Image (cartoon, rainbow, N blue to C red):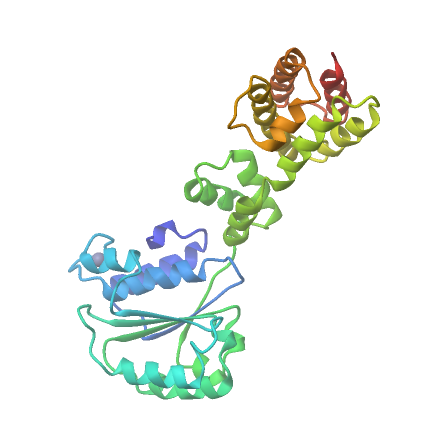
Length: 320
Ligand SMILES: [Zn+2]
C-alpha cells in the first residue's frame, strides 16, 4: 500500500509526502485515530519508507525492501502489539530498547511498529522514554493509539502526532470498491453508511454480512407452501425494511430455489436444507417459483415502493 491509496486525510497525506520527499520524517511518530481509521495501514506505509532503498522517492513500492515490507517479512521491521499479552510490557520494552542499538540487517533504518500503545502501562512507557530521548541513529518508532492523549505527556512531546479521521461515506464507498471488488455496490454503500465512513468497520460489516439475508431466504421458502399466508406475509413485510436487504434476500432466495430444483431432480450434492425444502413442493411448482423469484429480483432494479413490493412479492410467491 502506498500513501496515495490511504483513504481521505488529504492534508495529513500531503504533509507526510513532503516529509518523505525531504527525508525528514521524525524518529518517533504517534498515529492516533479511531478503530478502523487506517492507523495500521499508515504505520505500514511509513515503515516501508524506513526500509526502502530507492535513491528516488521513498517508499518506491518496487525495491526489495518495499516488497519484503509489503509481505511482512522484512527483518528490519519489528512489530509489537499492546493487545497481545506481554508484547509491550516493561520487559518487552526493555528488549526493544536494547535491540534498537543493534544496526539494521539490510535496510537504511530499523523500524519498530508498536500497535495499540494505549495499552502500555506508565512503567513501560517510562522505560520506552529513555530510547526516545536519546534515539540511536537510523531507528524509527511508529506507535498507534486510539488517542495520543492515552500516552504520557513525556512520550507525546518527543513524537510527531499524526491524526487520522474517517473518510466521508462517499470517499469510503470508493475505497471499498477498490479493497473489496466482489462486494456489490449497494452492499458497499450500505456498509459505509452504517459504519459512518469507517473503512475497517465497513469491511467487518461486509465480511459478516449476508447471514441474516440467507436465513430470511430460507424462512421465506419454507413459508411459501404453508396453508396460511400469514407467515409469508410477515417475512415479505420484513424485507421491506430496506432496499439493500431486500436485494440481498432475493439474490439468496434465487440461488436457494435453484438448489431446491436441483435437489428435486435428484442432485446428491444439494445441501440438506435444499433437499428438505424441496420435499414440500412438486418439481413443476419449484420451477415456476424459480421464475417468479427471478422476476421479483429484477423488479428491485427499478425504484419500486417497497411497501407495495412486499405485498406483491407475497402474492407472486403464493401463486400456484
Ligand atoms: Zn522501495
